Image (tube, rainbow, N blue to C red; front, top):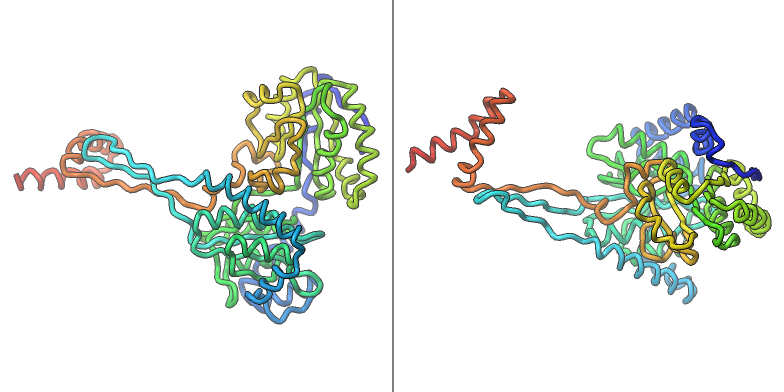
Length: 437
């Protein structure tokens, strides 16, 4: 861990940029080629490539990619009552928040006889990528499956890497069942993304893929979004990150715990503390050292702390400025009158306000979505919501009198742009209506 306290106002502009720099994604050139080779293999060889790559990367030889209803039923019976209740509770919380995001079509008569409508329809087919590296992630199933269910996407496909026995975790399957996902495949990595984009005999292609993953999955999504027509991804994704703004009255043990909750995600995670109190930062340093030793993923968290920052700012207004510049995935505010800072904070994936609002709540059961933009993309990309599973389009219906009402406006602008065909499409109608009269 970098023990020194960084005093923000003593840094040059260049040094400030360096302090807020994200960890570089290593081997980018090699990674790009490796992923390109995997995508080409799946495109050419379909299911055969999926079986071979699963054996190569996951160490298991599969006889089928499909998860049957019988397997899902068995998973429900295998879970403890306590575990099942936790999944159902989280499902209910997430569903309540996302259900409130359902919108009606909007119709406006912009002028007499001219009616315009904004309609919302579900994306026809979506793919949900669920990582399963060191542990199953039923929370991600819920974060993706609930909005897909509420949007009423006609087809929802879930892919997830199998364990060494060729199985998916019971928690994954139960969460998928709650979200009414009945098309589930035991395949992961870049090859799973390729299958969702190109389609194979077993896995028909989808229109859009959602979900986080390792650097291979992230690179695959990026490449596929540029290669395949009418195929989209949810958002660019990088390593997990959290920024905490804390004042002198913050609880140092809470702050340290929040920083470590993200540091344990991966060695490339980044955590940042901004405080106007040297004393608070020093207390957090002590807490980090003691708490990290208690983590089962201690080595991962310690590696992440090496590229993390403890920054002393002159006041909380400066903390807000630094946060807006960094644009974190998660932002935690542990200050007196924390709500007051919300007025000035802009660039962030999700904000956690107050001493008793840990980021962990948003990851699992507060109700908000935990799929968030990272690497500074929160400046331009929103956190995942129900809207991401739908597409919007407009409808207009114009009466004869309505067209007459806006005809002069249209023809004047078509003249300005030199588009005679556009003008004629209006005037021919007006001429014909005049003749009829």
